[in-house]
Amino acid sequence: MKQTILHTALVVRDYDEAIEFFCGKLGFELVEDTYQAEQDKRWVLASLLL
Image (cartoon, rainbow, N blue to C red; front, side, top):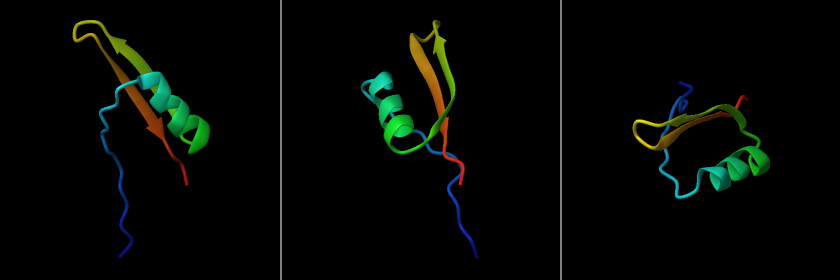
């Protein structure tokens, strides 16, 4: 049976650094980068299409 991971969440210290690593070095595609003012946080979604 083929097994896959569909979603995972990571807490990172620096979003810009994480985006550069995952998208620039590992080949992920940045799907969403939204600032959530009410929580003073960013929601970042990156996808790796195989």
